[in-house]
Length: 428
Image 1: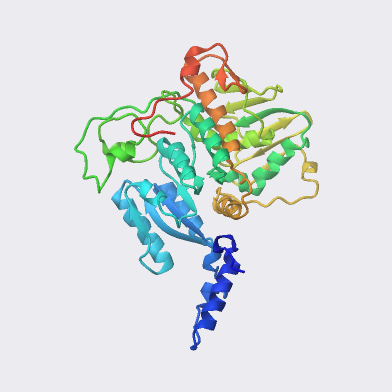
Image 2: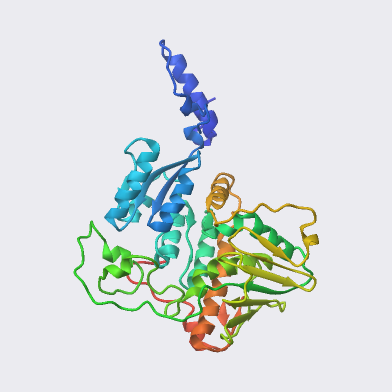
């Protein structure tokens, strides 16, 4: 009986092919041990083939985490900046001892490749949602840096596309895979603190702002910097080199920007995890006395504050219940209202918010098709909370959000800020 090769598992197909080849020739064939997964190497049939889009400063760090994994083969980078394409190619080729890393100016050429399984998306936030949705529609899984969306509308579409396509999506909220944050969220989520009353997030800044417009300067050759592709779905503006670094263009929802989304996509995400990854708050109050307060359906408060933290490092969060509280930060340490909350457990302290564990979680899920910790639904809820808070901040008044209809109640002005038009020819 003939077997359909497309229905044979990769390991069995490789073994069958090698056996047949050995029987067909008289002379012995020497097969490198790396091809069979020996001597600590991962067999080609078990490797995850990865490409990268927009690999700048943060992306280079992420790429290093991917390259550490023995089952990853990084094969191509797409970037609008020539200097970055050259730098990433050198980094990858030096790692593998060859010159095989391909480079593209247009990321669509990378997505057209049938050999790539997963994509690292580390562009500026302007591109995250659009690139992620195009990656999913190209049949590839993705690790996408944050903030993942520019507004509420993108947050909803992104999660819906991932659900419909069945792609594995991991937001770059790497603190979900650090043990002390996970333990703090577990205490809150499982009732160890009593009925949860308040969760606190550090927003990193609470200022409503716009992208701005800088004086026009001579536009470089497209191969050096593809300015039109860099703008992508954002509204057109003239070239200025100062716009080429850091975050770019309408971060946080059209007219609304600010640090609530930048740090919030980490800190609010952890608060969302602590409350059980439920839908986001339904009431958002404007900033008063240095704090913004949002209210969940069950009455738990989400409080954005910049001051008043125990010095535990950046990205602090605090969870308060009726019988106890816990606070954590990037130092890797916890402070608890009572040592009894540890229940004899020793929580590993890993400071500096490394992404290695988060990358590993993503790769494992690529293989098993399980949901990663920073999945699209979790990212949607945390980002909606940040965007809605930004809208209350921008309008400087209370807004009410309907999680069923995904719109603000009786507020036309707030509803107009839920989304924005994309520049031609880009679509979600």
